[in-house]
Amino acid sequence: MSEQEPLAPSWLNPVEVFLQYLKYEKNYSAHTLLQYRLQLVEVANFLQNKAESWLKVQPEQLRAYSMSLKARALSARTINLKLSCVRSFYKYLQIRKTELNNPAEAIKGPKFQKPLPKNLDVDQMHQLLAMNPEDSFGFRDKAMMELMYSSGLRVSELVNANLIDVNLREKEIRVLGKGNKERILPIGGKAIEALQDWLKCRAEFALPDEVAVFVSKKKCRISTRQVRARMKLWGINQGISSQIHPHKLRHSFASHMLESSGDLRAVQELLGHSSLSATQVYTHLDFQHLAKVYDNTHPRAKKQR
Image 1 (cartoon, rainbow, N blue to C red):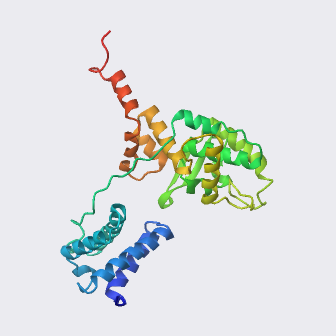
Image 2 (image 1 turned 90 degrees about the horizontal axis):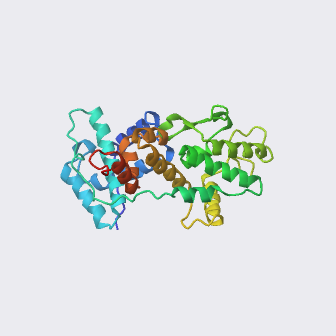
Image 3 (image 1 turned 60 degrees about the horizontal axis):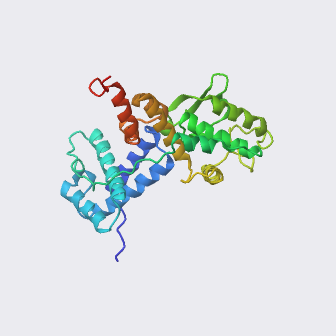
């Protein structure tokens, strides 16, 4: 296999400018920026012998790239992620070059069935959270799980929570979500009690200048990996048949809130989703509940008495 030619500035420079835009204007994470760089460099390597620059690329050349991905037997999800990067890049170029005919506009990836998020039912959640801590870290773990289920936190939001963000008197927590978007979330009574129990123990492990709410045995902020490991362990200890992980608690929060309230927009705000479409997946989780609401409320569905 011959070595790839180095990318010319006409290919590489626009990518670098785009990445700066994503970093400073969109507040994308370093991991996301790296993925964009890798994907766009891959596309540029494919196209550089077929066109003079990004602005000269034709739709059929991008279709050829899409076909090359399928030929590599990549999954539908991977192909769609790669093409999504290309589409985002060309939308940015179109803003800067309004006369540009976007060659990526009509390029579509293969269809795939997005799996529904898995959640625990209410009884399983009660079973999990009925844990009886026997040491300080047990109180920490209970507080983490109660808080995640109470407020629908992402695991990143949980581990990044600082003492100053938690207001027990007002029963709320301030979190910084994706894109550095801040939101204030309510904390339920059970989570308040669990947090109070943990905060009584926390000083045994946290260094005097540590600001994190949750710390590890190393006396520093707990990591997402440690949170996952502890939740998995508690799921086993509490006899839950399915594996417990942080996302499952967030999904359970979302589906249970939607079942009880039916307010999709409110659940969207609580989860910190930028678009309603990201939240709508939860409407598929409990059709039986929706059918029951329909039967009880729709004039034509009410039983004759």
